[in-house]
Image 1 (spheres, rainbow, N blue to C red):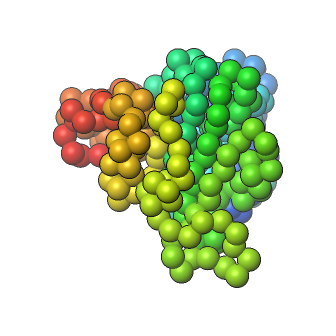
Image 2: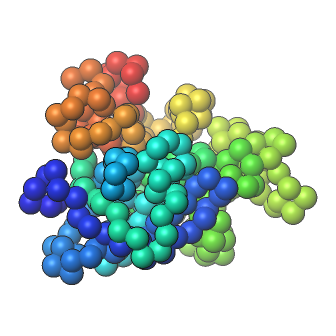
Length: 278
């Protein structure tokens, strides 16, 4: 983290990928090489991304810590800051504060199967840990990714989905909502919980990592319980209106906890005792 917690790193936009009509991925490189050399983060952490004169917006770090020299973020145009970011171009300078928050305990998952379940724009918060474990592939057993979106056009990271699909050591299941398919679509058609239920996967020696819209979480959790998952083996990441990044502004508190400081990674066991404010 930067020595001054309020001072952002200056980052240069090195690459822009248009994921969908309103979702972009930025690859950012440090302007100062000394900052790049010192910077470290772990899967699950997030940052505050700023564009000068407009403000800051919170996104996870979507790239893996095993990929050095840059960080990536993926965002949807949804307000003043994200619209300004979307208008930025390669070579422009933006700010980054972080990393903040806790992390996925991937060391504790070694020797286990990993089941990633994501919906829509919730794949970016999970992409970091997916690539982190793929880059350390020999430490984990089966890796399965279940990803759904409203339509084919809404699927993000299409080039990486193709790469995962072609790898023999990864099982990828993609699905779109009924009506969201195209004539060329070869994936599943149906909502994520339904597709997960009929996939015939096991909970034995498996960690489930789940991220998606609340309605997807609501209907996926009973499926995981029916599969035999214990609450402690189900992980998710929350993004409750985080702003300052270190538990001072009070925007992201859930009960006594601050998502930015005590999270954003929680097990379902931890979430069950929280007020339903997430």
